[in-house]
Length: 281
Image 1 (cartoon, rainbow, N blue to C red):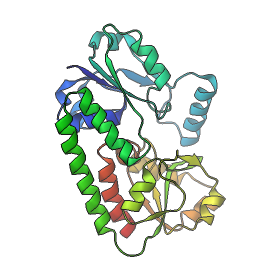
Image 2: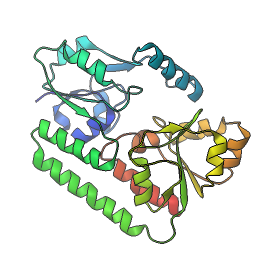
Image 3: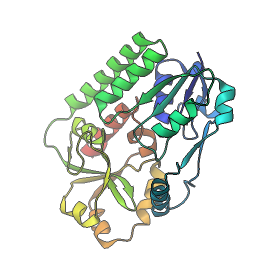
Image 4: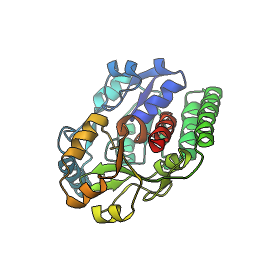
């Protein structure tokens, strides 16, 4: 069975199911586990990730306005790879191939692959996606075992989160400021915190600095979408807004958003475990 993954979370799910050897192609952002970095890249981005956050935000807004996807698919390479299973997503058109572009690509492939579309907004939906991938790869038992192990670890995190719940603000972007949504508020709750801005299952959304300051969080967690900790620290250092500086005068912690909170896959459990340590201080 030949599998192509169009997003990092799907690649990590396939690997966690023990099917890494079936992957024949991955997206330009797939970097975990390290073995996948040598696989053919079937996508590329029109947006330079080295640009400042504000410039990236403007580029994404322009792509949405014009209807031109910021992510391109190498259709010829995809056809050459002849996947039996193609894993995509319908959650976000910003950093991965969107549902419409996925349908267009599939229409060009012969034979037509089995398409698995992931669409998780909550932790339960992440586990549903794991089962969907397991079904497609004929690894149902492995998917059940993986889910059971991950849920056990989450229960351990929750059991260790006793006492008072600190007020926690998780930021997914800094220019403009975005509050993390989807599964992140659930992770905060499991880790022993009270998310003061996000709601489980709701999209990440922009909030002005004055509103964020008024939330009076005890802990601000900077977990930027697509960025590691050093890049997040650089982005934070570049923020000059006076209200923002007031907010960051509180306790600030950093989490690798690219590896952990931005990808709806197995490493969300690692995110919960790390958040528990950060929240406790």
